[in-house]
Length: 201
Image 1 (tube, helix red, strand yellow):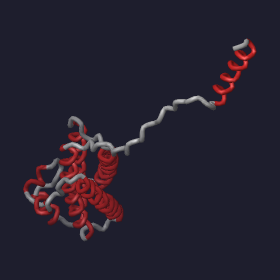
Image 2 (image 1 turned 45 degrees about the horizontal axis):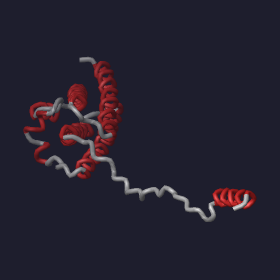
Image 3 (image 1 turned 120 degrees about the vertical axis):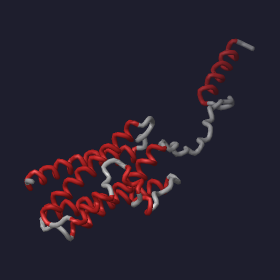
Image 4 (image 1 turned 180 degrees about the vertical axis):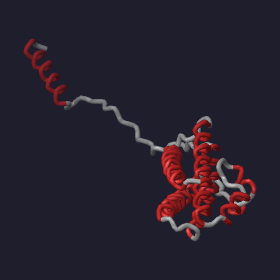
């Protein structure tokens, strides 16, 4: 091969390499993406117990509000009762749905009204419920506020217990709900204490 031929050959190879013609290129083939599995559930037994217990806890507050409707003449009491009833009914529906979606048992209606229900923090005892049921007029209003403050403080104890349980409240829905309970019921406690103070003895 002459020098000229050699140069022509080199130039031809360079041209082929630049255009990719006549040469074999290797391209990296991306593997097919596997479907992304949903994140594993992070709920714990403590989360389940909290939701189950809080359903019964909320249910008693609604029973107390039902008594208030026929016993108070105060507009501020009626407004507070309506706020409690609407919010806690909505939260009960949310908690029941949360339990169903995770295959956990919903609390039995009879159990919520039985002896075990009074073991939850802040829950009124049967004797206290009877006392509230028999009260009338201003006495009822004062007693209602006293007992509902006790009831709400119990809910705060339940939230603290949940947050202290290892691994609990890691699901965003559980954490958000527990945080809402703490903030909302703390605000209501302050509101009820102010109302109670204005009533005097």
